[in-house]
Length: 116
Image 1: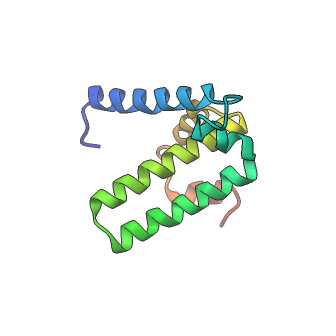
Image 2: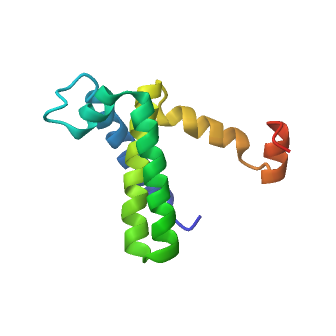
């Protein structure tokens, strides 16, 4: 990675702050908060939205420029964080899972999970 440690820390803090803001919207008024509206629709609707955003990322990657890819990626990350909050996990849960996989080849990692 070419980022300096300070830049990486700043980026991680942005994700953490966004997750905290998203989590704070649970139980808020769906009429005044898009995030609260997502929570009120339930996990199935949130998961569907994540899927839609993933498709939009793919379209941007294949047919649009870097700015569109960045914007759609931000939308996907936001909706994924909503899904995590609804599912009762934190970014730290995901970072721990990634840390367990660090240093494994993709083939070894998939074999360990019985996917090969």
